[in-house]
Image 1 (cartoon, rainbow, N blue to C red):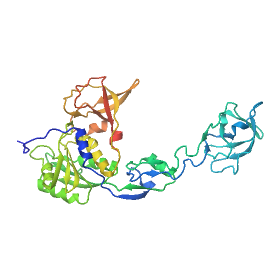
Image 2 (cartoon, helix red, strand yellow):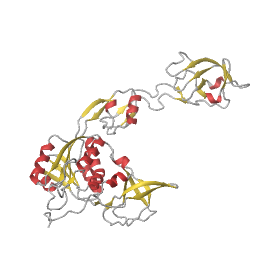
Image 3 (cartoon, rainbow, N blue to C red):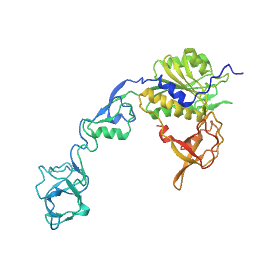
Image 4 (tube, rainbow, N blue to C red):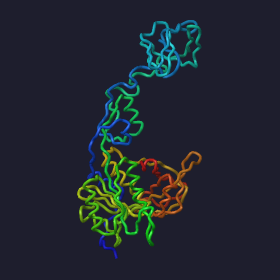
Length: 412
């Protein structure tokens, strides 16, 4: 018989995340780091451009720059060539009236020039060039500030810095950015049957995969992870280990021990030194998942089954970690795809089958992994992502449209 006498109503994912919104705030301090060290860090303050990008008008094509009104009204549209302008080597003065200059991509437009004709449509001669009569003012000219205007707010606080954000910062001439320090997370596994990889397995024991999966997921977000090993199935040992870790970490994550069995001790250990906000979600896989506080430090208790660990991390622990890191929007985009499978669905729980995508004429098709077992971790290697079947939806038939959540978004 379970030692838990009453089970609360299962909470939906939306209810859990809404509850977290009111309880979580960024806990990380701010530091300034060079651009090269800022990848995937969380920007701590808005960035305003100190200059126009590009800082001057320049040619978008190799060709000839000229003043459109200098083209003769009658006769061949020819102009004498008065110079040559390469990137980094301006003409040194304004464009002479009635002349053109040879110009190359990225080179600064001379004052007075307003048009570039690309070389493919021009005919050069000895000291002159014949230009297209169909040219229009402004052709192939990039304006100063066309990319970024001086004074524009370009990057917002809370942005997780990708390569493109670093490139934009460099284009504005910045050498460093103010970012939040990495989140410090402690990871435990629980269970007397768990052993470290590389050790001989006694009868009834298994190697621990959850600690390595969870630590990898956290590091992919940019967190600093402390691996605190495997905790035995004893309330006091779990409590003492979590209290000790709480003082030097921003987030504690365990796997296993949060269900309702007599050997599941994590819930009791947390309640002995902190509090639980919820501990069961209306999802499959991953119903037994807990969130609370241990000595004032946020705590997440993931299930014991390895697929459920990954699914609940992506749905719940990922947004928790990103919010603690100061990220502005940890949401995941869902994409409509066509189901190539049949799936019975019990209303009231949100299900997440593992799927792989393939292409069919004009559409993406999702193939479901044959087994629904939450212990089959190899299915997560096979899959491209998850399909989300909402609580109120019925059975899925081949050809139905379903929402796809790609690992490419949820595992970074």
